[in-house]
Image (cartoon, rainbow, N blue to C red; front, side, top):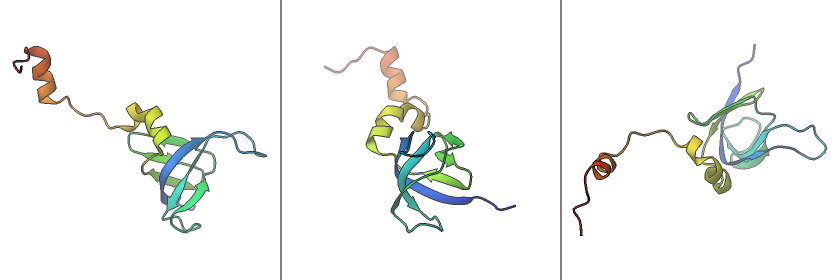
Amino acid sequence: MNSKVRARLNNWTIGHCIEDKPCTISLFGEVYGHPRFPDGKAIITSQIISVDLIQKIAETQFTFYDLGDACEAVYDRYKELIQTPTEPDNEDQQSSSQPNSKV
């Protein structure tokens, strides 16, 4: 049994349909560390099997992609899912429970 390739995909975006092919969900982006492509090559992945936007990993039939920075449009649309949840800032908690004393 062959193990999957692991590569990094930067400046990625989500693509749905490619002309002359069945409609699938793929990622478009610049690949790094993939044995079939030179670093920085723009690629279209094969159909996505799963995506974890918290851990920033996408899986296709033969490859795991570590998702680097998304292109700006993807980030704007999915930023709530891409950002890792953080604990509230102590200042925010204090300011909501105490009146602001600054003039």
